[in-house]
Image (cartoon, rainbow, N blue to C red; front, side, top):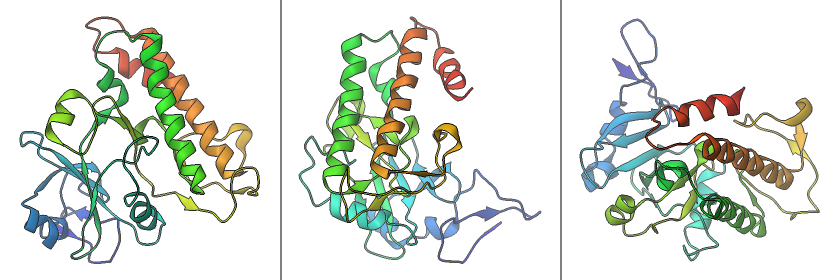
Length: 252
């Protein structure tokens, strides 16, 4: 097997037939000088070619993202990580490597619904999570940063064990991740004209291809709320299938 030598990402690994080996970690990442200096070894593929993770058997666990220099993600993180990490800032505290190709090294956190636990949530818990997302998006918008790909997969929650493993995250706090589609704009909310939508996980209404970017972020967080409500309404004690069922319903 061999990995691509282009700057990338994606840093794919190919098998002997030329197909992408989705579970493999690229040698270039394994040999990354900053990871070696930190003693971090990527073993799991979260998003082949882009995002990997250290072993869940070794705590603390980290997610490692290969930053695409053709996007504004690096600039967004460089700006956001210089700010006070306390709320209303809901950027996940992380490190940008200085050696080799830039990587983002993040605490590995679970989904917001895994943070809330296996039982049916109270309305207070549901609204607390949603209001944190709204607060985080409002904070970004005040900085003229739009995320452009907000969805349930791009918000994570800090559980008890996460807070014990990673001192920089807060128990019960929701964090926004993945700024690969983000943009920093000259104009603020109410002033910015519509822009072409990038590929997104949320389906645009009525097949629209252009949207006010600030309004698009707001539209996407309502999709997250709808998903969380569906999960809450279906969740019962010891029902391990409920999350999968809610996920399927939200995509139907």
